[in-house]
Length: 264
Image (cartoon, rainbow, N blue to C red; front, side, top):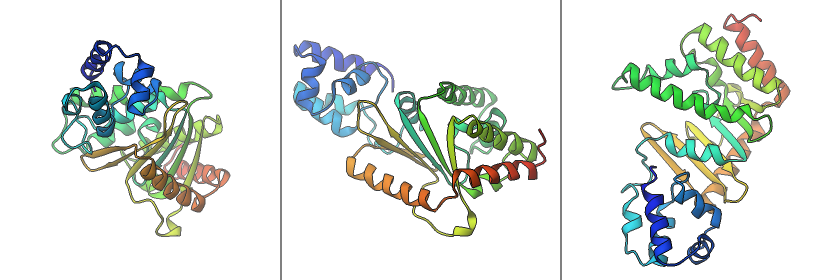
């Protein structure tokens, strides 16, 4: 999201003589949410935009700034990037690929090489830089709290070859050993389980309701409806309850890295 929406919202709010708190109260939102939208750090949902239009008497002008179908974002990673920077707790689920914030550069490039149609080297470089920037949230030793729930297929799929996989899994192991993240693996032997999305992220915030973010091929969606977020959280918790404990998951990660030929 560019700052255009936020700038226009701020202008309309000030023209109406409202403070951020007054607008938030009238639109049934939080002041901090209004602040994030005006600063371009958060994209409002269509329902948010409709309420803001109604309070500010702007017809459907604010709503028209949003995509026609809010299940599709222009850059499908941008919504997640914005939310990650604000989250106090992040819970990831991955069915086939390592979650973005845990990926090494070589793993990223191996994933990007499969794009259809192919991306140019310049486009790949831009995406890699963006993902590495996203991963910097792990530089803080405390926040956000990050849990990753990985299907065992994530570890077994040899993305980029044995060397890349050894490096990637060892990177995750080190983050766990440093107590920066928790990782739980869903073993392939357990069969079917509740989560069906290929990638899913749940995020909690200090002063805003939780959201969920899901991805499918060429599609992405931010879920902010409380009932839907709760359903997704329940599915995540059920799958987590079937996963290996942290200690056993870490042992499996180490063994898999060794299988790929990594030696400390």
